[in-house]
Image (cartoon, rainbow, N blue to C red; front, side, top):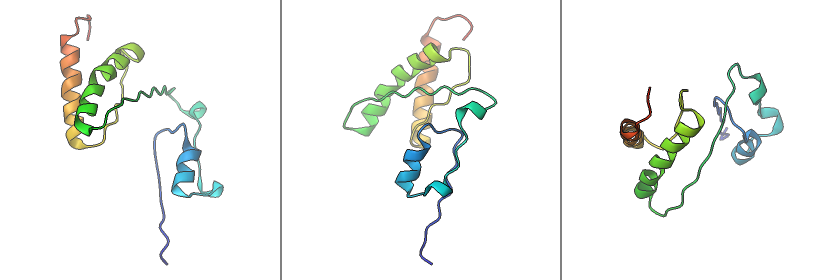
Amino acid sequence: SGDVRFVALTSSLANAQDLADWLGVGEAGLFNFKSSVRPVPLEVHISGHAGKHYCPRMAAMNKPTYRAIVQHAPDKPTLVFVSSRRQTRLTALDLISFCSADERAGQ
């Protein structure tokens, strides 16, 4: 048959139904663990940045991302999602640079 089967897994998703609708998954095909059953609470913070061109927009997001980490999770592990391996490296280098320039004790 020409059917396509999706298996979509994620650690947590606030809009699982929206994603299921986009993928064309019926109600019977969606199983979503609610945040309340997680052994460790999860906080989600989303920030958008305007810009037409990919590279300058991604670079412009790094300082606000660093500020958000300091504000919301200064002493906790944090995940930052980017779109490629190359962008992961560039973002990590910027975040390290911002952290080393920050004069907060114990970083």
